[in-house]
Image 1 (tube, rainbow, N blue to C red):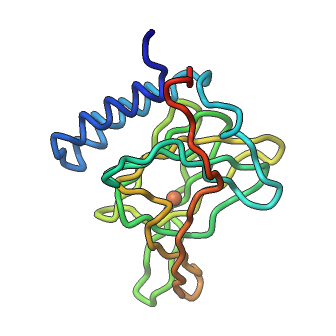
Image 2 (cartoon, protein in one colour):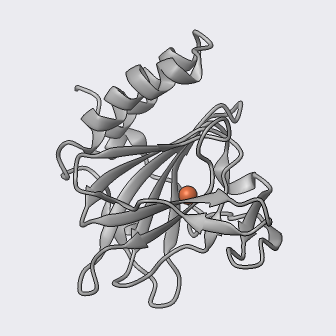
Length: 192
Ligand code: FE
């Protein structure tokens, strides 16, 4: 039996990280692996596609036992968006279904944060974040009438990471730990 797409991605990504790659390599070779995973929307189990009426959902699909990376399905009901937030580790956002609008925020001399040019992600597109270059953003479902789903890969077990949300006008920061919506992860050996 051949490996399913998610298992195949996890294996290839683990092999890539075993070489201790630079962020540049992760954002090139690793990005291609994620592009392959999201190129056809036929593998994400239904349990990890369910929106919540109030909150965007973060379902853990896989976490490396050494916290070197994690794979998360983000599910957005129509109109949902994140606060302005950071990640503290490298991240890649692969659009699987629908459209998302990502807006980078830049710190100003007075401590406030101003939005940069938004990017619309279409299925198959991979966006990146990094504390070295562009770590603070806001993400929104670009649809007001349908669900959007993206597959995120981060350089840590992102649900455990202490991070910050920002009030852009005042620059005020607040700590948060995102956790995950699910208690059970998919069986990689039974996922198409
Ligand atoms: Fe983010």
